[in-house]
Image 1 (cartoon, rainbow, N blue to C red):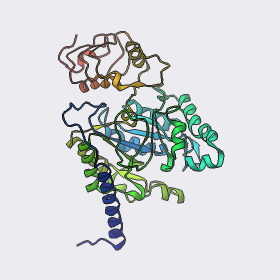
Image 2: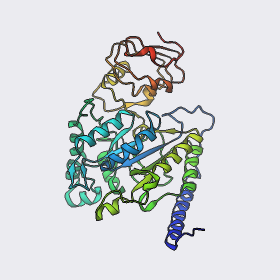
Image 3: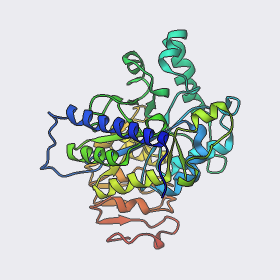
Length: 392
């Protein structure tokens, strides 16, 4: 018979106490929060969900190797918050292999968020160098770097980020004011009040960290997900690396600094537990930008066509999901579209013309519940695609 060591028991106790207090604080802050029960639940508009937010892009190999298949293609969408450097490898900038992996995750429907070029603590850096220098060195430098990068094969580029995650969870009201709405629609930190986020949210959004010294108690994690469902809102969970269950006790990388940073990891088993719990509660997975009500469309030709249809000029910073969900007919023929990322926001669509484009993957059409008629001729391989009621 195996017995837990005293340190292990102590760790389990403090983990339980932390999550117990966290849950009860959330519950107490929600006393006067009443959910409207007699309404249709529509994704992106009012159907409660979970946003998984992963920080520190030097962890991109774990994200890619252990997360890509786990999340699937437009099945579980998450937000990956990136920096411009690798702090455990001489502070070098990301190499092309890492850039390619980040862009391939984006192509699978995941959001690429902003996490500061050098991963500096906002309050400390601004105190030492001033707000202007912080904006220049941390915010604008990464935006410019992202704009310069291209996938080595597909030539895809990063979309301009909608969300910002504060490094080390350090921020104050002045930093939020500097960023929203001048640079981003939504910023993400750690705990705040009820820890839930409404739809179409602008400003600071709280999150619950699942790793590091916060660790995770699965019992209370499930209760928090159910609480979000009951209140009709959303909860953001912050994570860092993704590792297999069997690697939980191993060092991810060598070195003193790495020993400290390696503890910030969740296992694939924990992520699968969250996925199962969200599915069991009939909730959705969202990116942080989607909680802010912003559509993120990968294909520039699709975005341009949509903007023309809804009379939203390209100079306008963001496309709102609320402008798309009630459109019933959409003619996107002859638009040189290659990818359908973003079509899922047209929740109320009944008729869709995609003729004469360059689309090879039509899986996202499954996410449009009322689609009755779709025209796909003139696309590569359209005859082998989904049978969606009526295909011309």
